[in-house]
Length: 172
Ligand SMILES: CC(C)(COP(=O)(O)OP(=O)(O)OC[C@H]1O[C@@H](n2cnc3c(N)ncnc32)[C@H](O)[C@@H]1OP(=O)(O)O)[C@@H](O)C(=O)NCCC(=O)NCCS
Image 1 (cartoon, rainbow, N blue to C red):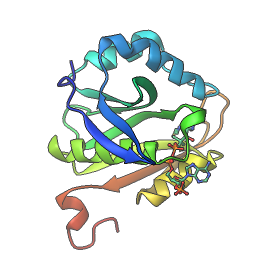
Image 2 (tube, rainbow, N blue to C red; image 1 turned 135 degrees about the horizontal axis):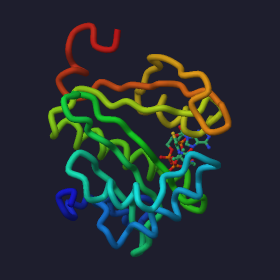
Image 3 (cartoon, protein in one colour; image 1 turned 45 degrees about the horizontal axis):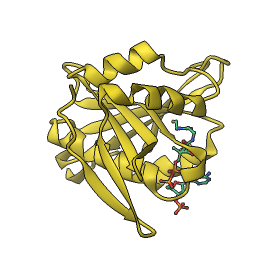
Image 4 (cartoon, rainbow, N blue to C red; image 1 turned 180 degrees about the vertical axis):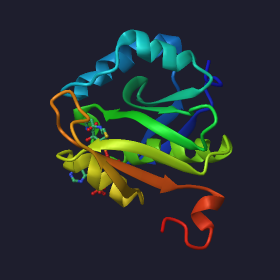
């Protein structure tokens, strides 16, 4: 398990969005959220494994008892950089700050777990995600040609967090 339901709440237009760790019972909802990707979807088995893995953390955003978004992060052993595997919000719940809240929660957790950075890949043509990460302070550190199932390239983004972010010359 990933530390149980250490939830947090975020007020959005009067509604309470609850952020909490996913449990085994959430796996069907996590599978459904993967439909927000055209390809490179995580399988039910992978998601179930990640929910239970101590070296990973799966967060869900719940609104009115419904899972409307998720974020999956891995903490590779021996690395001080957390790797964001997945982030998805159901179409009817977008542009309400839910993804940004999930990412900020991941960043807090990464600091709590001793990480100095978060890393992720984003498709070059994913304007929404690129804008989101830019707004949150993620910086381009590289590209990987043909990273995705359709040979589309990925941008590698990184954000320093915690003490690393405050250090002189951080990010340069
Ligand atoms: C990308 C995604 C996760 C964003 O979720 P979201 O909850 O709508 O994002 P937020 O509301 O937190 O957006 C925060 C900021 O990101 C930027 N942003 C988000 N969606 C955007 C869009 N469609 N166009 C332009 N900017 C966008 C904006 O700066 C936004 O702030 P604003 O609404 O005040 O302008 C969502 O569109 C999604 O699930 N897409 C499909 C899956 C995916 O691509 N995941 C990312 C994989 S790397």
